[in-house]
Image 1 (cartoon, rainbow, N blue to C red):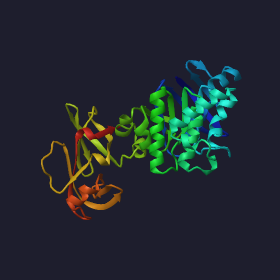
Image 2 (image 1 turned 90 degrees about the horizontal axis):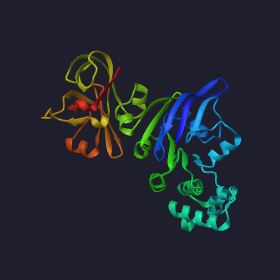
Image 3 (image 1 turned 30 degrees about the vertical axis):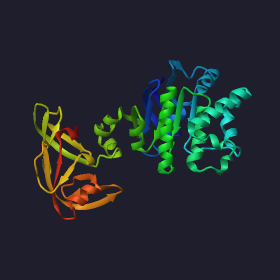
Image 4 (image 1 turned 135 degrees about the vertical axis):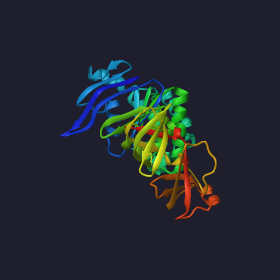
Length: 352
């Protein structure tokens, strides 16, 4: 549906985006994640043809976007963009949503039908005559979303669509995004720094780091098999341990680390590596017990931090585990207690 080739964007002396090569498939939800200020919004604006690249090419449905002003307008009319902060006019909700249709010269009956349908989708039928200025943040974002989808775009671009919204509003917006994608087969591209939102919504994820695409993959690949340490840290891998591969027997690598040995499913036969283990993949217990897990490391609890329904457990070995608060209470965990951290070889991701 959309293809970016060797795309660069420079402001003054700074390359904001560098050598972006990316393909978006028709009908998929593609999420761009990355730290704040890394260039996600700039990338969306380039795709939406609001800005032109310093160099490189953009193709929409196989057609180059840099052909002529007329062609760019034709392509832009097949897309819609929802910005992070909804800019609503000081009129009614209904009037706000008609904006794009009036620009396109739609008739009165058609406008009424399409706007009412958009209001039904976002769950604001009873708000049609309400002044947009009186709406809550979540309601305003749903109006902005209705205004974006009323023109029936083939591609919908969303820039931080749930930033600064309460959890219930986030849930409703995410439900709407999934519905629009499912019911209308709309191709959706989302830029967000909320990595969990990316995981919940995306068919595929692109990680943007320092202006470059650092990794593209399905959510499991990004969150459980990150390409490097920077990506691992961003997606919540707290256990990043340097080690040396000593042996490899039938795909199980034996890796020496400062505090002992870790076993991992890996093709590496030898050499220096980094070991990644997600904290939620570590089981904490009072006794060694019987388990099929290859990795059992003894340590003392240095810190216990409650995070809502979860507890973060930090050991003196450097390992961090994430367990339920219920597990913490049933085990009676306390600072200074000796425990065993257990995790499977399949839970370990190894990179050079």
